[in-house]
Image 1 (cartoon, rainbow, N blue to C red):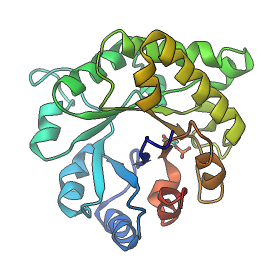
Image 2 (cartoon, protein in one colour):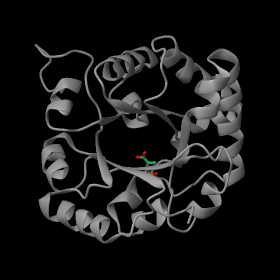
Image 3 (cartoon, protein in one colour):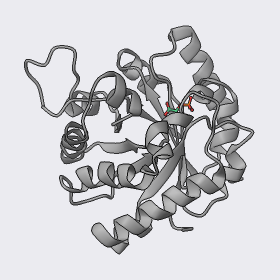
Length: 248
Ligand code: PEP
C-alpha cells in the first residue's frame, strides 16, 4: 500500500547514557533522514525528557512501556499523562521482553494499549511468535490471538502501529527472510480485514522487527505489506540512518 507512510522505530531497550545518547542524536541530526519516513526512538524512561528536548524535530520520541492508570500507588510505573506532560507522544507496548521477562499477558498489554490511546498517545504494539511456536506451526494462531486481544479493547486503530517481531529473530542475528516476514504481514492483514475491518487492514502500518540491519533492510522494506521496522541493536549505531532510508 503506497498510502501507508513508512515508519521506523528504534528500540534502545535498557541501553545508553548521556554520552552515548549525544552520539546517537548526533547521527540522527546529521542524517539525512528520508522525509517520507516517520522516525521514532524508544528511549529508557529516565532519558525521555532529555531526548525530547534534544532530538531533531524530524525524530519523534517513544517510551518503552507505560501503565494503565493516570496516577497513584503503582511504584516504579509511569503514566501516559506523564509522557504527554513532557511532550512524548508515543509508547512501545507489548514488546516480547515485557511479555517474557516481566510476564505481561495479552490482556494486560491490550489494556495498556487502550488506556494509552484513550489518553492521546500513539502506540507501537508488538506481537510475535517464539521459536517453539513457529516450529509447532502456530505462528498465525499466536499473532492473530495477540492482535485480537487488542482488538477486543480498542475501536480506533488510527494511532496504532503494529510491530511484528518474531521472538526468535530479536537480538539473535537471525532475521526472518523477506518472504517469511511478508507471509505473516499479509496473513495478519487478511485477519484484520475479516475480524476488524477492511479499512483498518488497508491503513494500519505493520513494522517488521528482529535483527534488522543496514544489510537486510532494503529487501525487507521492498515487501508490500512491510511498512517499516522496529530496530533494536542497530538503532544504537549510525547504520540506523540507512535503515530509516531503506526505501530510498
Ligand atoms: C527489538 O528490540 O524490538 C528488536 C527487534 O531488536 P533487534 O533489532 O536487536 O533484534
